[in-house]
Length: 108
Image (cartoon, rainbow, N blue to C red; front, side, top):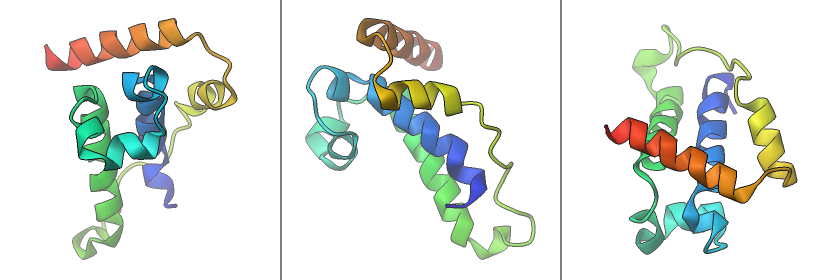
């Protein structure tokens, strides 16, 4: 994967891991994104981050961005948080609260 999309991918993964679709209903993140019934219940923040990631991926093959570049390189900002969620070293209630706060901030 191109380095410029790694941060966006990790943002989407973290958001999906915190979402009720994965946390409560125990669906796989891929199912939450591909199934239209589950997708409509995802928080707006996750949808926005998914859209940002997809735009980044489109930018990889966009010829007009070949010379300018697709965006900034990965900063590693989400690496530690992503690692905690992947290893299961987290409190589910705390993660759901974080998602609710972030989603409320975006919709305001």
